[in-house]
Image 1: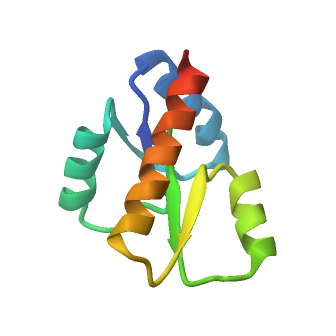
Image 2: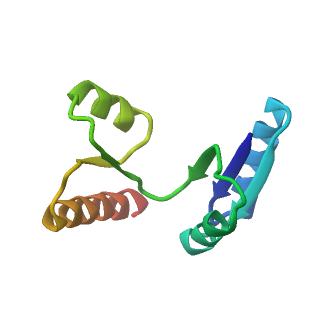
Length: 106
């Protein structure tokens, strides 16, 4: 199983790695920020199985089932946008998520 750990804290990435190593045969890539993560993703020979990140996440989905959206938010997605979407819809969700993120960080 291949993991990408994205966190600006080296200590936090180390903690995550230590915990996930208990799964057995695992591989890790680590990034300190989103730019580094995107670089790793673009250069990866195969996709990562799972990414653990510490920045807000917006799910883009064709699922219109409200229960699935609620499940995703409970799982850690900050917000979701149903496809197809307009540029205005996406930008609105991005702005909302960033505002919530800033309030949480303050």
